[in-house]
Image 1 (cartoon, helix red, strand yellow):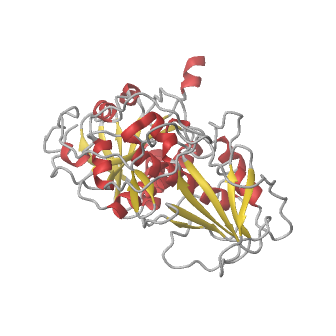
Image 2 (cartoon, rainbow, N blue to C red; image 1 turned 30 degrees about the vertical axis):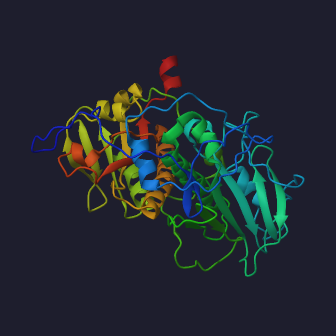
Image 3 (cartoon, rainbow, N blue to C red; image 1 turned 180 degrees about the horizontal axis):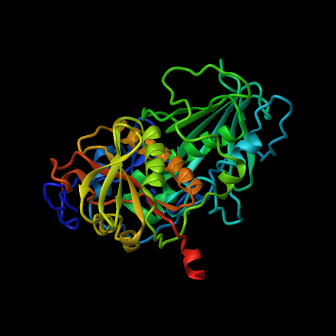
Length: 423
């Protein structure tokens, strides 16, 4: 891949020195993801202890060429919430339909638990969901844990004082599920998966015509990595500090949300410039100011394109074929070299602090999820790509190294693999 002035893409397989130390997301700090010595707890869960690790070091290790070790046990697919499971009642008039909201966003649709509306690396689904329910909902006010496999809730206690009407969905992670396959590469994937789950809730709220959903993806540490507040139907006043508004196109239908899936490779066929601009625009509007968005395309003019300042056209960011390098950077997934286009979110420099890392990855997952829905609306096949090693896009384009790393991607094609096999 070349810039217009002829600077060449550097070899993506070169080595870099990185600090050691994988980590688990856990409140204000990170904890070692390995199970304690001896046998794991009888319920198969892992409870993090106080082994703090630096998140920037963990991300640097995830970006390195170091390969994960053998798979380890993933543990339970759902957090073991206490108490008996309860069905979610039908919503009454003017109530927020929590059963429909969760069905359109997080609930599993097959017995294995792999197929869900929110994308997840390796279909491991590490995101756990707690509900803080206020007035105006189909559940009585209180705190609940959600089981996406059985589509049931467990009552955990009373809601906090001054809980607003509607529901606040708190998203956290059980890192062991993703670590079981991806090892030290799991940490950015956990954040991206959480962003995808937040986007799924946001879109489900819009499909149900609730009050305007509010999404917290600010990267601040706490019990939850992200939170989505969904008011009951009717007007509601957004609160400061939250992502709000409608960064995607018109509200999706329930059918659209239930049909979204990551298309299996290959994904051939270059999208039209108009379609690519629509997908890029959706991502850029939803991704916030810390990320830069572009897309790698092939013939007839291979290179990188990004939205122009007028928002109505695409402009060239770099010239030359980039997709083979992207395939090497994306854990060696060779099929990416033949994808019709690859949407890229970049940013999160090597010296970013923990809140910046959390914020950019959460927003990248959120934005790619919305871009995926836009791509499907335009008839494209799409597949998120979350694992990136040595993917210093800025350095490849001749900029100073360490400043502009690929954070997330979305491979696009005009012809689904299944369709190609039947023609």
